Each structure stands twice: as C-alpha cells, then as structure tokens.
Image (cartoon, rainbow, N blue to C red; front, top):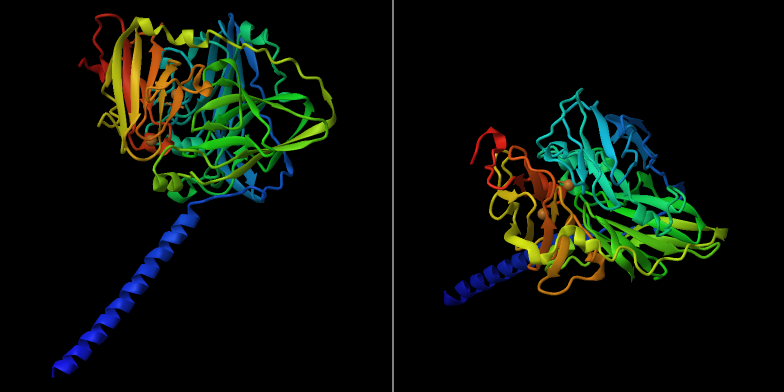
Length: 498
Ligand code: C2O
Ligand code: CU
Ligand code: CU
C-alpha cells in the first residue's frame, strides 16, 4: 500500500513539475515578446526618398503697428505609407506654418477653429498675459474665433504652438496640430549665424507615427518610425558648409537622442529659450517632448550624413528605461551636400554670455517651492481647473525645486517664464542646460533647481499651467496651476477667492 501511494505521489510531482516548467516557459515567452515589441529600430531601414517639407513662413500684415497672423485649425489628410490618412493641421493638412516675429513687436493672431470640436492654441515658451496663453482656460468652440494679442518681450528663440484642451492635448497634437514660432532680435542677428529659412536654417519638427494614423492608442504611442515636418524618410539638399537645424520634439511621449551617423559633432547653439552663452560641441542632443535645441552641422562638398536618434539615456531603472523607449533607434533626416558649398560664416566663440540673467539673480530669490512628480500627480494633486495650486507675487524671483520620485520618465514645463537651471542633484548642470529653458527632462530621483522671475503680467483670475509634457500624463491630470498676483492681491480662479 505505501508503495502504491508513493508511486501516485511521484506521478503527481512529475505532473506538477511539468506544469510549472510549461508555465515558466510561457511567462518567459510573453516576457521576451513584450521585451522585443517594446523596442523600435529603424536605423538602416529608411529610404530617404522624399524631399523634406519646409513649413511655409506664415504671411502677416501690419495693422496699426501690429503684426497680424491668421491661423485656422482644420481637418485634412496626409499621404503616409502609400496610404491617405486623416490628419489635422493649421492652414493645411498637417502641422502649421512657421510664425516669425521680432522682439519688441506687437503681434495678433486671428485664430479660427474649423475643427468639429473645441480646441485651443497655446504659445509654448512665450512670455505673455495668462488670458493670451491658450491653455485649457481659453477653449475655442468649434466654428468660433479667438484673437490673442501681446508684445514679444524675450530673447530670440525657437518656440512653438500647439493645442492645450484639458484631457485632449495628446489627441489634438498627435493628429498634427503643431507649428514653430521663431523669435528674432538684433543681438542674435548680429552674430551672423546661418539664418536663411529653409536653406541653411531648417526647421526640424520630429513627430511620431501615432499622428499618421490619425488615432491615438497605447500601442501607437511609440511605434514605427518618425516624421520630420510631416515628411516620412526625408532628405534635405544642402548648399552651405554650415547648416542650422532647429530641432523640436513634437512627439507626445517619446524622448529622442540626436546624433550624426558618422560620429561627427553637433554644435548646440540654443536651447528652449534661445542662445546658449557659448557654442557647445557635443556628440548627442537629448530632447524630451516639447524641448527644442538649435544645432549647427558642418558639411563637406558631396557628402551625405544622417541625423539619427540613438538609444536615449533616460536615467531610469533598467525596466522603466526599456519600456519607455530607452532602447529605440531611428533614422531621422538625411543631409545631402551639393558638390560646391557656400562658405560658412565663422561661428562666434560667444553667443549670449548673459543668457541666464533673463531668469533673474539668485541673490534676489524670495521664495523656494518644491514640486514632486509621481504617478500622475504633482505634489500629490491632480489638475483642478478652478484651483490655484500656487500663488506668485509679480516681480518675484523664485527657485522651483523639482524632483521625479515616480520611477518612470516625467518632464516639467512651466508656462509664461523661461527658467535657468541652477543645479541638477546639487551639481552644476551640463552646458546643454546653460541657456534659458521652459521644459526639462527629469531623471529619476534627481533634484532640479530652476531659477525664474515673474515679470509683467498679474491676473488673479487667470492661471498659468505647469505640467509634465509627456502628453498622456498631462491629459491624465499631471498638471497644476499658478496665478501671478500683485503684492497683497488674492487669487480668484474660477470666479471665487481662496
Ligand atoms: Cu507645450 Cu502647457 O505646453
Ligand atoms: Cu507651454
Ligand atoms: Cu509624466
């Protein structure tokens, strides 16, 4: 009897062991599949057979000393993957024209919403009154118009514009609603940098393919290849020794790490808010969604070079890194130099030595605020349209200490101001952060100290936003509001005082 029971037990154990082995294999298989599916690599697979589209410069008229632009958000379609897909654009089918204005100029934008639903237009990086900001409080219903006006009062920079309807930003931006807003000033012009738009000064708006399907779902967040100015597999003919690329990460969720395929350097001359103090020669430029960088590329006659995005260092733990696109690579843009090139201007050794001054003087700091980003909250709170999370006194210089404690990638973007990065985890930031910024990538656990000054526009009734610029996170509520008030004024957001 005991014998037989033993045999039964042995059989049972074997069955269990087999079952466990099968389960382990299944789990490992699914894990491996997920692991591979999460990685995208288009290096060497892009044909570069379409000339890079250059967004047209927006036409403008000058009325009563005001530069007036017209923008219409509209439905359209775009040819991608030999397929006609529905997209949205400003004054066209996909993306929008490049707006351009001079420091000191008064501008007016006559915006018409021809879409079937409400949207907004936000001027990302712009210093302007909160009612003109185009955030979630400036909704423009379908078929209606909105005409913001303000005076350009900040250094030359590559800014951009995009919708900001609460909960819908990722959808609207990914469908194609985005464009560049270039600001000029005399000091920048005097440097003699490449500045012939579309010739030796190229807008490079990089978006991901969730847009091209006109749909946004989790799988489409990061898949396939990338578009540049809406062009798939783009090349640009270069006729100058030195080309300036205005890189804008217009993607919803993806972080890029731009590099040249032959290892030659990129010379970064500007960040989000304008010129760096001096040129910064680097092998790669990391840009998270919403960030911009201007780089110079030196070309030899007849050569071809490819701008790529290689695996970005995301500063996350191993798994989070992998599942956030930390292993992905893309061929982005091919540059083809003509056999004879126009001589390059000399790149000045100094660009804007006093760039940081715009953000204020650390000695004047009157207040330090802390922001912790985790989950889909900032300081444990989610976006509330009728609540002022922070109240700032006009004219104050502050330090905002920002930390990502969530174990996954986040970024931090502040409306209205350009900030200067004082330190990253107690250390002096790298030269790529030496200029003005409005959006910064947050590596896990590190503390970023941002210096900023709130000048010009007090309005206790209308808030500005700060938020994670990973658009899905923003839509899920990872956003807060601040109002700028005159000394002693009470905020009254949403029609009631706090
Ligand atoms: Cu680019 Cu609040 O946005
Ligand atoms: Cu913004
Ligand atoms: Cu985030």
